[in-house]
Image 1 (tube, helix red, strand yellow):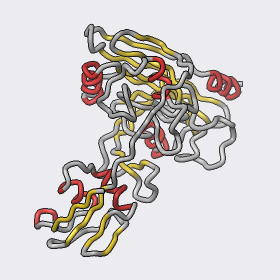
Image 2: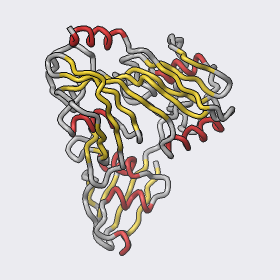
Image 3: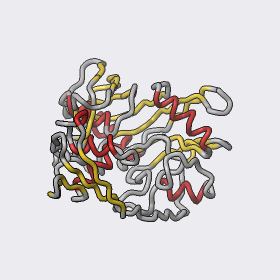
Image 4: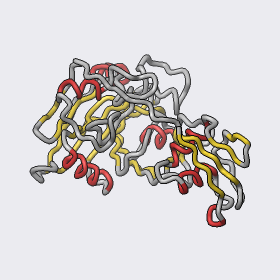
Length: 304
């Protein structure tokens, strides 16, 4: 266990404690600093604090305890995968509903990473650490559809670059509440919700997020079938953006109604199209995954 103590200098006076910790301790990110504070691992002038928004004064004495990292062992698991494409550099997987992408507290097994470790026999990129080998981008547990996974660091770095410059094509199918009459764009920054740290929200100081939506068809009972194209890829982006314009996704109990009229097991959202330039060949490749069965059955009900 490592303890670090420092005084708040003038250039960081009146800033939040999480921002100050991240600025002073190079190995600590802002999000990790927030977790440290919430876990009572920080004190100011000898008093333990748990509020990461606390603003400090010049000369305040901060002590931060950095817990020893817990060893992470992720076991390969023989879980069937729907592989749409595979070569020596990467594979494209069609993720089913209910599968978590990578291990996290409460989900140490049965994840996509567990399945990938078995399928690829450990040959996955290591850029995102031992918890997320091969994972370039992720989709939520209850979202279905396409993900690209890298087998080496060279491919991973190139696809990460494409993500950063927004050149990867990502189209999602969804059903939202309400009648959407025309195509549109939501350009609103997204950050962690100050009211609930498990949720995302439109935040002025958040990261830029842009979603373009296209009306596929109106449905019965005041629902609309949409296709959303991501210009950026923030956590819960489509769910937050559509809820912000009063059209939350059907089945989304986090950003929509708590009680839903259909048993969808989460939001009705499918990553149906994925396109990128292959990091090895330089060729543009595009893949499509058909709508999952539950989505097709729901469309049939709402079209009838």
